[in-house]
Amino acid sequence: MHLPSQSSAVGSKPSLEARPERIEILEAFADLPDVRKASGKRHHMALCLALFTLAVTAGNRGFLSIGDWLRCYQHDLIDLFDPPKRSSALLQ
Image (cartoon, rainbow, N blue to C red; front, top):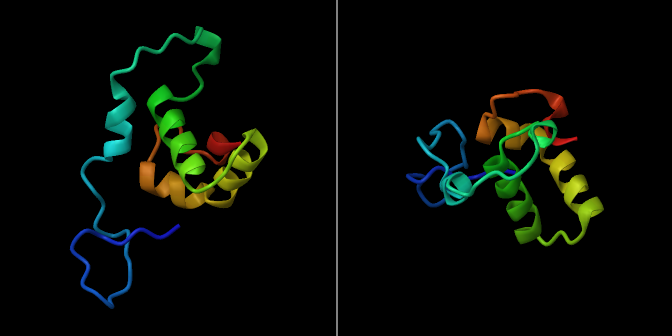
């Protein structure tokens, strides 16, 4: 998954070097109340909802295909979202 920076010119290589200060998809879910039990709060709910939304938007339907998509782009997603629990287990 390669996302071009906002200021990239036409024909230039996409780069993740110019990291956004905020990721708006996370902000879209940030104010939702988290009704999960303490044992179910392994990761921030806004991050989970953002990742699920991106996977479905990419054409994945169902838990298995969403999981496959997350595993396929795991390292890119971790680099992009920089989650607090920055581990390979994040998207498993």
